[in-house]
Image 1 (cartoon, rainbow, N blue to C red):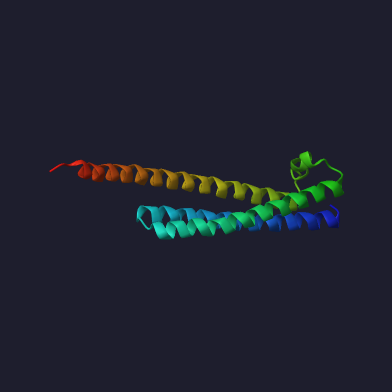
Image 2 (cartoon, rainbow, N blue to C red; image 1 turned 90 degrees about the horizontal axis):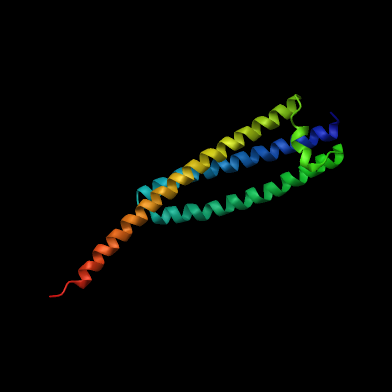
Length: 145
């Protein structure tokens, strides 16, 4: 492999590693949010959601950098950008490393999705309970003396 392409792929691996770390932060944040929801700590829950926005912004910037680098790799190697996955399916060490990081990223995103679904279910349960409590309190208003 040409040195310039090898450098590009090394940079791509670095970007994906950073993306994995950001998604790991989001995963931990989801676990924390579920705890905050369970313990009725709404203030910390909202603060955690706000902090996640910065992480999502960083991921968006990273995604742009990743796509630009992938496009550059395709341009330099003379491959259509739609065929990028064919490039990395070779058995060279750098491609094996890149595929391993992509697999790790997919696992982290899968775990994050599961945590998010559990958080949503927990919040939905709380919403239903709170609605029932509100209706019970409303009944008291209707009592006539």
